[in-house]
Length: 136
Length: 90
Image (cartoon, rainbow over all chains, first blue to last red; front, top):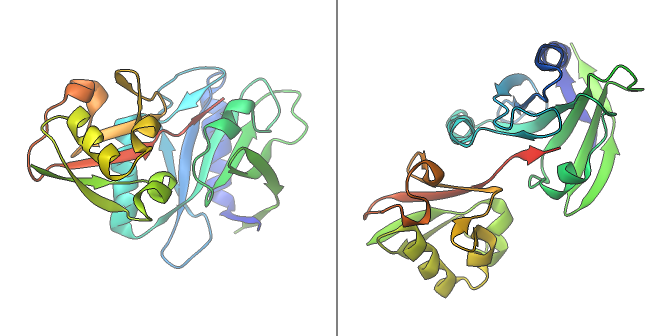
């Protein structure tokens, strides 16, 4: 199943990744009740503040996920950046992925990256790439 | 003392699919031990040695127990213990 995401949201993710470079950036995109389109951006603080790792701030994560539940929204996308490698899941990305229902979007701010944005399903140690459908 | 425990999707196979379960105890460690008695195997998913797993977040009400007293954090009747997998990667 393809990821359906708003063009403006994708642009905001890329801008955030460029701004945070060389540190990894991260966040989520939610969808409105009954919709599968990733439409509301929620940038998150990278608690690891690292060039090679990201981790949501646990207290911010709690607040954001509670707000999603209150708004009846779904966490559609979990995104992060790679700043010195391709937009492709690392071993840790696969190992620590616990949301089989989410699209894992990876953006690369590495100069040599062949494709700057890719989306994957990560589940039980396996990985499947999917297409990205960009909506106005 | 009855504590409401909110179980993430990932651990629900251990709680017979239940999202909310109740447990007893006066500290987080006691609540987890009581959970283990009801749902064998759940403790190993939450705790490593005397600490919560690095990539598991445990909250009492809204507070991450890492910023309180960890597994020794006291709990009282009516509190909610929420487990969320950390969101992390490389």
